[in-house]
Length: 444
Figure 1 (spheres, rainbow, N blue to C red):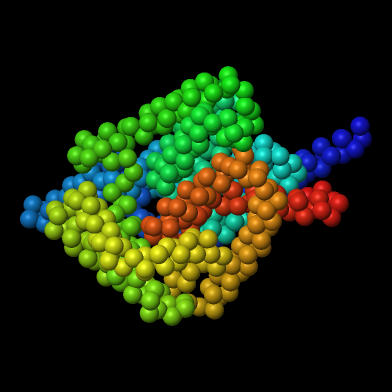
Figure 2: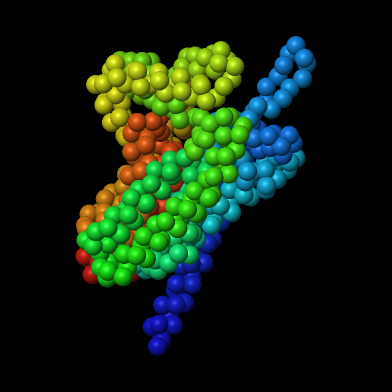
């Protein structure tokens, strides 16, 4: 009995240490870079402000002849993050402090849920390592100090994993509804999650049709489970459509198109597939920085010629990208490899041609962190073997594959893998666990 009591006491101490670490690291970084939250690089605060003050989700446009300004409805950015900012008071006079607290709470909640999830994924005490890696992840720390979607998207990705794990443990209509709602909500924050939602639906459909898949995913092959899985699949999809439908209907009314994602996809596709970028990949030297200003100016000029019609501008950008891909197929294949490398590369890409030595050393330190984390994650994946394709690990595999597939074609950089880092942390913790087991020591 004494060892059991001691173990519980140590667990409580470790959990307390994890809490202190999370509060110190997340809070410390936010305090140190508090001023960065004043910037609005993607216009999310502007969307939230216009929504609160004018009741319109869109950007302002001025009429110089009339001397007034109006708000034009937009679907260029996904709606969830601006809605959260608007509801939390992120547009008020104390908006910067509100956003800092909001990001802090999101980060703490993400770390806490990762520990909970690690226990469901049978990591035991090594779940503390997964949670600690998530708490200290450089991408997540950096993005928590910026007015961007990564902090919320990462939290929603973990919530989706928790709900899918629950669906695997108890395939009921309630758990299916929760999973569908979580994945659809995440899609309203980052449209890439729509691909994850589709992948989950396909896997559930295959599990319902084929006994072998059902055995791998749900660990059961009873015929009576088939009908339950079909009901779960239908429930998941119905709830997901219900969550997405207000955004789709709003876009149909405001923009004349039932847009499920955003009007930003065409631009993002063109950003990664255009003659300027392809030429840069052919001729540029290692470490050179590609400047997209000329492409941005061209896109904005075309958009103005189209009377600021986002839908038509999105279609034009997509056509430009497709034409470039068809004309330069070899460079498209090479650029896909480059985009995968930028998504999963350990060292952040240089963004400033006159980078200081301090920033360069910081980039290399981040690269060293990720080399070590990826090494342990690779050991974990190798140790999992076929279990990687069984629930619950398959849900994490699907979200990683979904994001990688999208950003193989669309524009990609290191920060876009932020929602995937908790999954990588779980795999790294499993790798550390297996190394310890081989050494005859299972203590974290």
